[in-house]
Length: 343
Image (cartoon, rainbow, N blue to C red; front, side):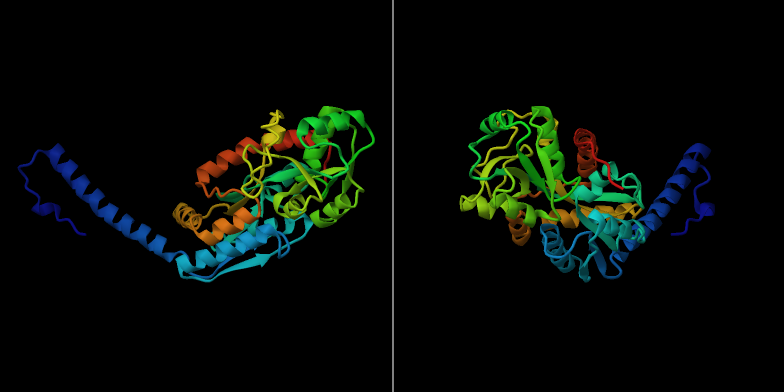
């Protein structure tokens, strides 16, 4: 737009004339800015989008990421591919995302373990979890359930606590690795109850559950999806869930909070979230957030998350940041109770 000041009536008072000129210039500038914003918005995505999952293919996080990729691709009209970068407790995949261009074409779908907890566990990381990533959305919760071998004479948390106290120093609990939620929650429970339980770490959840089924362990925290088949058949007993919400796939299993364990340590729950390299344009974050909230209504997405025992969240970036800030000190306390640091 052009504006000819010479054609502006000269009998208008100078101050008013200047205000109108400034308003016209601002209006013209707004038009240019609006066009630029529209161009920026339409420019994304300009190429295929890559979703990095910092774990091997086949797990719950990978399945959810692939469901998101399919739904996102249909809505954006661009290919969306999932790349598995497993290894080093998620550190390799996280590092790959941190060092990618911040243009919205590389995204991260990961568990809270690698997105938040690792920075509290490891003395050195090749990235700064707080500074090198933008948080897009908390996709879903990822609850764990306390399960025991059928030989354990307990059907709820009160009975299990009595059993633990009566067998101080004689019991073992398992986890799927040092620093995992199963390890940290079990260590905290052992410490605050004085049960002095032994921790047995496994390379994954499957071997942990197999040893629990075989009676080599008495108890463990396990992912709902992995434990549910054994709970349903009576091969394991479910004692209670971490977090404040019951799992849709285990509606009869009360949370530990409901059973009187109201410490923050028992109320915190793992989650699956989406992030990106820090510094991507705010317009792209807004578009991603909008697309993800649409995907949350997709029946296939709901089914996949429910099958993991989780609850769909798909909140805003601000809501995700609040969860991140709220949960970090709780995990820090859990790690301190477990007295664990990894290199």
